Length: 247
Image (cartoon, rainbow, N blue to C red):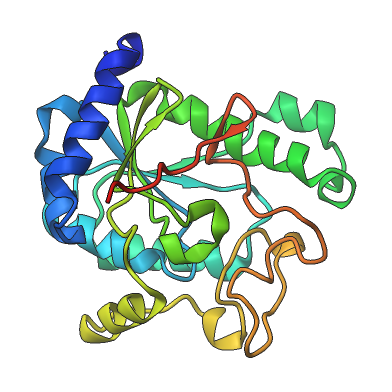
């Protein structure tokens, strides 16, 4: 398995990034799902503001691809309804809802207010640990991260070595916000209902606020704090950054 051969993961990632550097998202995704070296692959989706683009691409290429949906049990009702709507409309065959372990919530957040005092621990319990547990059966996973989403993602490559555990695939790494909106419009895809209400980036309800015109799209996530990532792109407490692209 990939996590047993870290040298091989680095080698595979370098090779794939070199081969597909000038390809588009569809080609990268098609090759990823057919690439023997990537092993078993799952897609992780928040069913958020821009998720429909990658979900649609996956549904066209291989709708049997496992889709992991993290239900933190603090999501907007609109997100849960949107997840059901998209899964049915795109005919996704293997959507798996994952949640925190009840014993972890009972120990650390019995009253559901941990987000008010320790957002990192809250995300770790409700997102990071459940996802790492769910990804245990896969060698690679597909994400919807894009370079434009902030400085922590500015050097994102199509393929990453995730802490010598598995390979992370970012087909939309080079897409802009305009690219996403054009794709949604051209394919007449349903938008998350909260986008029209001023939420261009959507996470858990207690930690997501509306964004004013001119603000960064992710400004409404953990507002008034220096937190930028929920934690699912951290492994063993360390952020997995994209490596600078070669000239």
